[in-house]
Amino acid sequence: MFPPFTLRYSRLPERFYERFEPVPVPEPHLVAFNRPLAEALGFELSAFDAEEAAVWFSGNVVPRGAEPLAQAYAGHQFGGFVPRLGDGRAVLLGEVTDRDGRLRDIQLKGAGRTPFSRGADGRAPLGPVLREYLVSEAMHAMGIPSTRALAAVTTGERVMRGIPEPGAILTRVAASHIRVGTFQYFAARGDFEGVRELADHAIERHYPELTKRKGGERYLGLLESVQARQAALIAKWMGVGFIHGVMNTDNTSISGETIDFGPCAFMEQYDPKMVFSSIDEGGRYAYANQPWIAQWNLARLAETLLPLIDDDTDRAIERATELLQRFPEQYEAEWLDVMRAKLGLEREQPGDKALIEALLATMHRGRADFTLTFRRLADAAENPEAEATVETLFERPEEIAGWLADWRERLAQDLWTEDERARCMRLANPAFIPRNHRVQQALTAAMDENDFGPFETLLEVVTHPFDDQPGREEYARPAEPTERVFRTFCGT
Image 1 (spheres, rainbow, N blue to C red):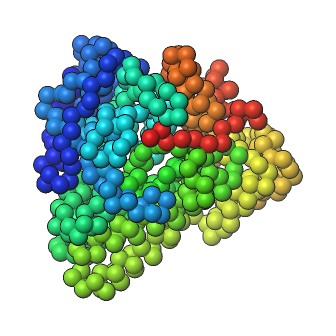
Image 2 (cartoon, helix red, strand yellow):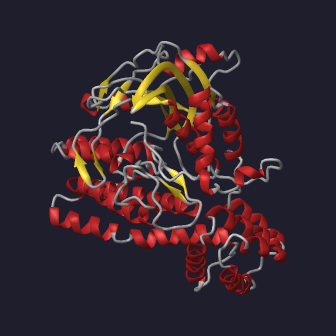
Image 3 (cartoon, rainbow, N blue to C red):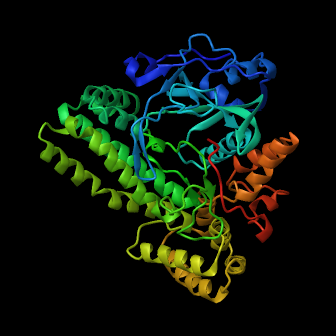
């Protein structure tokens, strides 16, 4: 069933991981399977059997050629450094080469207590597994780099998270699971040869164009490449109102993918200070803070690479600092590209940033829904009479009316037809996101009633985010006051 494993990470020195076999579960049952992803990965599905698949994706049977391991890493969690974290409930089976020639990790999340579990049970509740499945697949469908969900299996066990909850295991696919915290793990131990080996592995896997560079230029290039991908990634998050919730360095991927969906959520009413994570009491990872947290995390990566960048510490710090100081400019350029697309602006004009910021300020004052505002602007781009549907989203419609006039004046400077502009805007502005109340409804039905119908329907909706879906208009509707979800949980 599984494609051949290549086992690149397990060939690194043994201090990079701990060998670990998944802990069997009593009653594995397959509740979700991503067949298109499996086909893209090269799985043999001609004789697919759900019961057999549940055995594989629960870890009860290790696929031939896999060498399961738990990866070592450290990390800054809410600003405080923890020198030893590691995969406390995840097991990397190995890597496979997909049909496009890309190397992809296959990992079981919730597979039992590992040497890095720090006293925890190593399991995952069903709710967070389904949340990650929904949100990661929605992100992928919106064109945002993300880990993917291949399968979800219930285990027949209960896990304690305050109350007993049904257990589950997620099969996750990623470009890799190398994090900023992986580099920090070795740097904190003074193991700079480990940092070098990890950096060379990351370069070979994610940035092969850097292999031709020599000495410190190679490792400065690694920092530069990771920074560029993070700037682009966070700009895309901001463009759909996504709030990660736990942007710790151990949740920052070197590959530039969104990873570790715990207390994440999509903003409805626009508020730059919005926080959903139940553990982010100080608002460190609020929506508007995400770009600057990304820069802070990159600085932590830079610290680990300093001995590789230059033997002269002062010179290494100078070169890394010069690079990091360019992040705000890089991020703003990426963000402006995202927002111009959302507003249907064909080309760059000097006043674009002010126009975008004016809209966001008006949305904040008017308590407007983030996703619907932009989607209805696409309708208004095609038909000026649809501006009335935009105005209804604002508590003070007269304020957005003034902005709409400015937007019309700006659109007149471009060459697109109304149809061309509307088509491009609809490809930049999703009609459907995993709205928090809909996600919670799906999770509750699955956990409390063993009813996966709401989950399956919501998954179908959010993996076609840009399509008009007649009969499913209620999935685009913001939560009513009694439906609002203000806090999400990571499930660890």
